[in-house]
Length: 153
Image (cartoon, rainbow, N blue to C red; front, side):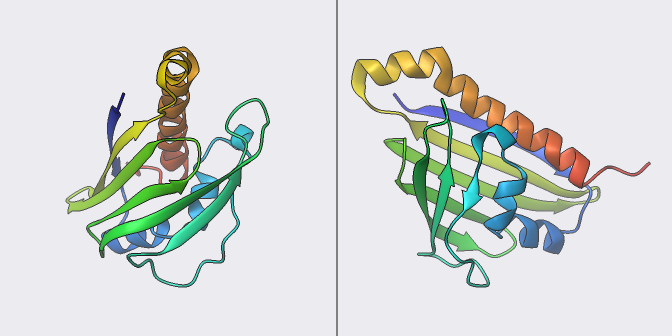
């Protein structure tokens, strides 16, 4: 069953700074919970582009390492980009990253559609821990971004 998650976060940075940070695959290492041992294993070749393949190693659960491969399927510079899983634990992973400049900096919106698949087993795993884990990843990300880009009073 496909699950949807949407999160917004106001960041007190310029649109250019937001785009540079979020379009660099290496920065995903910084904003992912440390217990996942997330690391980018493909070389970053400059600016993000449609068709870009990015590979990662991580241990999402019970310290079992996996390789996760995503493709950047859509890019509109300084507005949005989309990554979709090509190899990994999900049947579907479609993650949109949107950026909108405003008077406080940039409103960043994540839209995620995902499906673990695996029939009844996937439904049970989702209900027991996968959905909580996905929400936890985005909650950690929010907290980490608040530290990296603090609001000044």
